[in-house]
Image 1 (cartoon, rainbow, N blue to C red):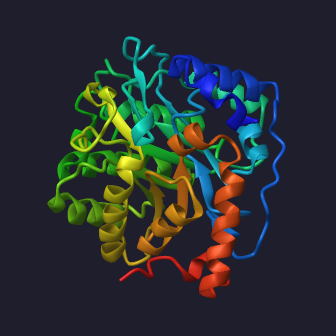
Image 2 (cartoon, one colour; image 1 turned 90 degrees about the horizontal axis):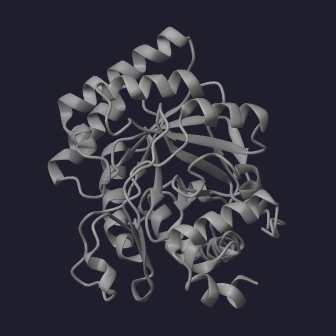
Length: 346
């Protein structure tokens, strides 16, 4: 059905089209899953077994409105957000742009969301039916960014399976300064202390930028290990990589996602994997739209996969497509389970 109406959808403003998709999912429209279950793609994360390693990245279900419908589509896990302590509108519209020839998006949304209080109430009234992550960040005008993260941890630690500390959006001014050693050390130390106060061991994930310098890879890895971070998401959108793009929207300011990010993300995953040596899970994001692209992430070191832009271009059947193609690839390669393939690329 998506293929039949895609041309119509792509005539609509991207943010309006997204809002219509959320409304359709709220009505449970077309959310039956035909995703094949197979032992080769079954995996374990944070003590729970999931049917496949394909997750939906933060940014689609920003306000935690349709995560249970997304589980029905077949996603192995879903991450909602980014959520900030207080409600905020985000950046002025228009702020989402399609680059169809490049199979990419550029967004400068700016953490638009309803705020921690409303979102937490929503989750309490509609408990997740699958593995749920909540992505958190600071308000753009906050006086204390670290405290904003802690406010969200206090609000959500008992409502999800993991929390993602987003330090990598290019659309919130100076957020990426948390990639610097001292700032990241201060943030992760505060998070660790907050978990002790709460007497809770909620898994913490850090989502990093694809635009970090080579020297940052070693220092970030050191801090992830020091604070027993459960996983790292590699990566968020990039504010670079515009040179080879075809669509005129490449001139728009914001974070680029989709196929142009694929190679950059894979290289970064591989570099982190070689340093982390399996001590910390890697969740690979960027340009995933097929079993082959998911497999490339896995052999470079990713234990789990997330996508967003791929679903915009391929539709909701993308989860079935990737799952089936991964199963076929594993059969061909003689791989009995995804765990055997992680990090096997030379």
